[in-house]
Length: 332
Ligand code: NAD
Ligand code: LMR
Image (cartoon, rainbow, N blue to C red):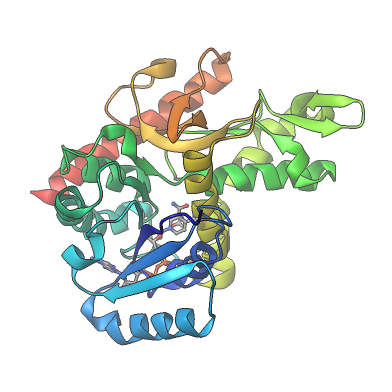
C-alpha cells in the first residue's frame, strides 16, 4: 500500500541551500524512494517572488513523489503539520566575516520560529538546524520550544563528517564509501575536532584502521584537522558563497539516517543536546558520534579519548559555552 505523504519544511527555501535541497527531498534522497512528500517552503517577503519561482520549477520537474508544495512567507502556514523541519533560513557568512558576526542576526529568528514550530508542527516533528551558528541556533530553538522533546532538535555537522570522509578517501586513494566511523566533536565551526582514532577503511583483507593506513601522525594531527575545520571558509573563498550542494546533500544524509537508521557497525556525527557523555557539559548542542534506530539517535558510548583529543573536545565545548552566553546577550 502506498505510504501517506510526510510534510517537510525547508526554511530559507529561496536561498542557495534551499534551491539545492528541495529537489533532493522531492526525489526521495531524504526520506527514501518510496516515501511521498509535501514540501513546505518558507522565506521572507523580499524573497517571495523568487520562492514562487522555485515552486514553479518543482512543478515543472514533475517529481513522482512530490504530492504538494506550500510556498509561503507566513511562518504559521509553513510550520503547520510538518513532520520534518529543516531550518536553513537566516543570513549566511560572507568572506571576511566571523561566525560570531552572523550570531545576532540569526538567533532572534530561531527564537521566534521556535514557538511557531512548537504550536503548529506535527507531534514528534524532527528538527534539523542548518543555519549558522547551527549548534547555538538549535539550542535557542530548543529553549524557546520547551514542549518539543529535546531529542527531536538537532543541528547539522554531517557536512563536516562527510568532509572528513572525503579527505581520508583522497589521501588514501580509496572509495569514500569504504571509509567509516570518523567523528566530528563539538561545534560546526573552526574549533570542531575531526577525529579519526576509531575510523576504518574496508579493504580486500578486512577493515583496517585509518591511523595504520595513513601512517603519518603529523598529517592526521595537523593538515587533516585544519582542512576539515577550515573547509567552509575555503568554499566561501573559492565560490564567494558558502557551501550549498554539499550542505543540502548532507542535510538529506542526516535526516535519512535519523529516520531510517544507521547501517550496522557504523555511526555518523550529529549535533545533539548533550547529556554529559564524554564529560562534555550538559546543556549544549554538541556534535557526537551517534547511531540511529527506530527514529531515535543514541550517542556511541565507551570510545577511548586520548589526551590530545581531550583538549580538543574541551576547547570546542568552551567555544559553545561562550556562544551560548553571547546568544543570550543578543536576545536581550
Ligand atoms: P542564502 O542567503 O542563500 O539563503 C538564506 C535564505 O534564508 C534567504 O533566501 C533568506 O531570504 C532566507 N531568510 C532570511 N531570514 C529568514 C527568516 N526569518 N525566515 C525564513 N527565511 C529567511 O544562504 P545559504 O547559503 O542558503 O545558507 C543558509 C544558512 O546555512 C546560512 O546561515 C549558512 O551559514 C548556513 N550553512 C550551514 C552549514 C552547515 O553545515 N551547518 C553549511 C553551509 C551553510
Ligand atoms: C560551511 O561549513 O560550509 C558553512 O557553515 C559556511 C560557514 O559559514 O562557515
